[in-house]
Image 1 (cartoon, helix red, strand yellow):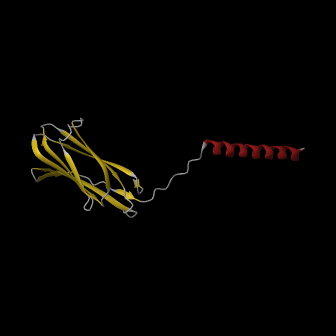
Image 2: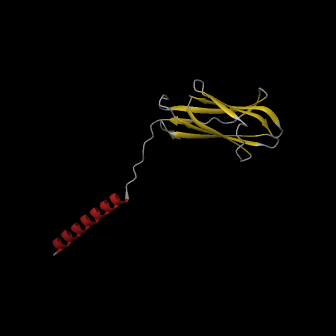
Image 3: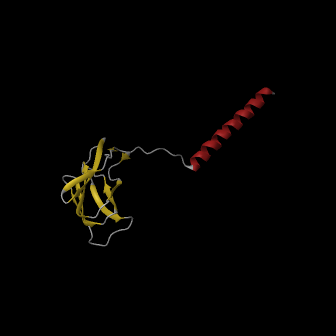
Amino acid sequence: MCAARDEKLTYTIQFGFDAAWTDVQIVDEIDPPLQIDDVTLDVNGLPPLPGFWAWDYDDDSGRLTVSIPSVPAGAFITITIYATVPDTIPGNIPITNVACEYIQDKRVMCCGERVYVKVRPCVEEFVPEAGSLLLLGSGLAGLAGYAGMRWRARRR
């Protein structure tokens, strides 16, 4: 995947909880650090009440911490992170994103895969416009017609 500087990226992290827990933190480490624009949280597909949870991002370390005071049994938590690739990230380096779940300060599990995004200038693909294609096609048809007229004139 190609990510240009100032491009908006969206990461989604999901954790399921079999039992009810208190003092849950989900820590997402992004390296190199991105500019975090917003973070949203859903519990079983619904946004929680205001004040139910909080998030904090350390710009220097790239560590995003989402704190949830209590999680009901059977809850499925989805965290969506909206970020921007800053100008300070040099080209052609991977951005890694690893999220871990902590319950009462004990690490329970981490997401299994790292997300690699190559940051480099994206090359725009040339897509001809309809008017350009029409002009090219009519020019080629005109040349074919002219060549056909000259060919017929030679044969006589």
